[in-house]
Length: 328
Length: 168
Image (cartoon, each protein chain N blue to C red):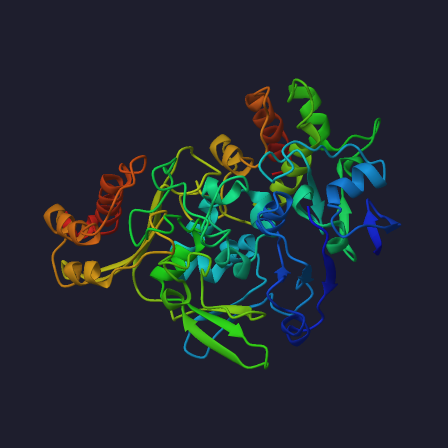
C-alpha cells in the first residue's frame, strides 16, 4: 500500500474542506482499502468521516425516509420501516456481501463501490477506468461478469451494488454537500454516468463533494422483490438482478418500477419497459414484450452472452411472482 | 501516528503507520495472534473480530480508525479453563480440522447470534418482519463470510445450532 496522510474529520465542512483530487473519504473502507492494498487506488490522503453525524434514518415530511450516508448496510436492512415499506431494499442489501462486510459498509460508500472487473483490479493490465486511454482488455477478453447494456468501446464494466439497484427502482435521490456547504439532491439515475469515452468518471460527484444522505420517497402500496442470480448461493455479486416494485389493481398492472443490476455500468432502468406493463393484465406474452424492449439494444461480449436470455428469464420470473394472485 | 486502542477491555498506546490494519496491529504490534490472516481482502473471514460488539473484518479496517472503539478478539471471548459457550460448543462438536479459521468462525458466530436476537432478517428469511428461526439454512447464510477450507461446515453449524438452542 502507498503511504498516505490520515485525517479525522469532525464536521462535513471539515471533510469537504480537506477533499481534493488525491484525497478519498473513508467510511466502512471495505472496497477502498481492498483497492489500496492492490494499489489500484493510491490516494495521498484519507479523510475518515466515521465521526460525522450522518448515521440517522429519519422520516421526511412527505412520508419517506432520509438515510444518512454513514448508516451501515446492516442497520439499513434491519430497520423496521425499511423491512415493512421498502422490502426490495432490505432484500437487496441482505443479498450482498457478508454479515461482517454489511456491518462495515455504509450507504454512501455502497453507492460509490468500484467495479469488480478483473482488468480494473489487475495493475499489470491496461484499463481505461483505472488509467484513462490505456485501453480495455475486457473487450475480447474474460468478460463473463460484464455489461450487456449501455457499454461503450472504452469500457464494459458493471456496477456491483445490489443496494443501488433497489434504490433505483424506488426512485431514491442522493443528497450531496458541496465545498461551499450547500446541499443539493439528485435522482439516483442522474447521479450515475454510463462509461462513454470517460469510464473513469462514474458519477456526478465533484472533487471533494460528499454524499450526506439517500432520500427514499414515500412508500407505495405494492409488492416488492429483489431477485438475484449468481454463481453461488451467498457472498457473490449478481450476474443479473431485478429489483421490482409492482402493484396490480383490478387485474391490471398499476405500477411496475423496475431496475436491473449486473448488466450495466450503473443500476439500469428503462421506463419504456414499465410503460408496456402498466395498464395491462399480467401474462407471459406481456412480460416477453417488456423483455424485448429491455433487451432491444443488449449486446453480449462473448463470455457474457448468456446474460441476455438470463435477464429475460429473471425479469419474467420476478413479474410472475409479483403478479401471481392477479393472474390466477 | 499515536493511537490508543481498547482491546478486550484494556487500553494500548501505539505509534502506528496509518497503513497498519487492525489485524496487523493485533498480530504484529500487540502479540494477539488469535485473529488470523487468511486472504487479507475480506473474503475469508479468518480475521473476524468484534468492534463495539459487531463482527467486522479486521483486515479491511485501519487500526487508527478504531480509536475510541471497543475491540474484542478471540482472546477476549474466553480463555483456557474459562471458555465461552461458543468456544465450548466448537470443541464438543469438533467444529474444525486445522483450526486456522476457527477464531474467526467463533467471533463471527458469537456476534451473529446477537444479530439474530435483535431480530435481523437474512437473505433466506421468508418473512422480513417476523423474528427468524435459526434454522441450519439461516446459520449457513449468516455465516457465509467465514470460509473453512477443511470444510468442517456441518460440525460448525452443529456447534452454532447448539448454542443458539440453549440460549433461546
